[in-house]
Length: 634
Image 1 (cartoon, one colour):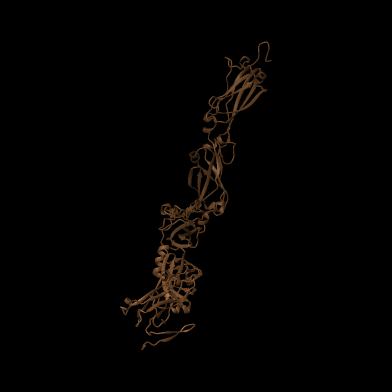
Image 2 (spheres, one colour):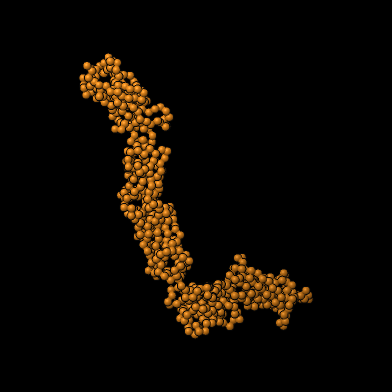
């Protein structure tokens, strides 16, 4: 009697009978409970097991079916199988059946029916097991690409510490729905190359089509410690349960600004405002340019932009740190010009600087207060130069010329009145290198009159400076309540002394007739072509002095002989400066005198660079006897 009742099993095309109510489904150990195979299971034959049925005999066989297609050939039940009632039988699905052989780049993912059939050789009956569904999934999630995570607006211009605090110290983001989103997908985030938080997709996430992920403050601070303030690509990848890995998502670039920005970088240094320099930037300092040293600060890098503030809200153009200067101290030393300093002409100016890197603030310095006073007692453009005059009786009255006679006396300076002067203002003389502080003090009478007046220049000042072709003479106006002297335009003054004139104190000696008879006469035999006259070297002789010689003839009674007059100019040069200059008086001029006498003088004409006055020599003379006995002077 048969004790096993068989059940009818409906397939797509027919009915088959299934017996053995305890016939187990085939089991695939490497599959997930829902039948999904991981990719690793597709690289080798897939083991399938099932329990030996209750009435198994050696007259029976078993065989796997993959999507109703027989796999291999039937396998006989062996005696050793029957020896253990708890025996599990095992068969393999070949690798080539696990993934269909179509386009390898676009595999067909599907669920396959897996069963095994029992066949009894005696009864010729076949009994199929129930199907187990096996899923093969080789499709990468998120194809062809998936968008970036959605971040709160606070990150748009860089996430600061204060913004993160306002967000609850957690940066919450959303991974929006991507293609093939499925429960169990594993999402991994990356901040640059640094692995971030992860999430596993839940059914509720699929319904909402978004997966929340949170970046903690601790994580973000760790990231910033590694990458600084650089823009970083924040991305994610998805790994499904079959271990298919998605492409990396589109990146969202984010900059972290969590570190507290230091506000105590070393204060700038303004040496001209130091106590050793008077503690004040005055007019002259500003005109010369004010140097501001930026001390070295920790972490300086080439390319850092340093913005100096001259005044709380007066930024100057940013200056980049050059490659190689990042370790220098000072790291920068810009020189501020007058127009910058003059923005605050009388004030205590707060000076500080800011450092930026890649557009982000890296630090602010301590503030240096600098006292500035630029106002002048009188605007310099109103001041006029002095006019200097000598006080001798010499007829040379040229302004701004102190001739040798004037050089022995005091001089006068004509001061031009200007509006803006006050009673008790000081006029301070600068005569070349000589200075006369408080040379003159403005009186009430001067102020009331408001006109030009003379001021004496002491001879001691003139002689202390000495002579010169263009001695600069100027003055400053100072006021007790003002640290800035107002400087007048300079006046070039010619100063000459007798000692430095051609011939010195004794003057120029007379020229000398060098070819005279024993009796001291100019005679025909010694003057076949004329007679020479020597201008001897003189004190203060200079190269390129022009020597103008004048020769004149006279009758014995002193009557001038016009035809005898002869003038010639020659120049002192390197060949004659040590020997003197010789002039030849032509024979015709001598014959015109015949029997009388001659006088000769010369004048030295210095050039402007010599700073000397023209000078005339003493008169040289000699008797002239050009007559021949019985012939006369023909």
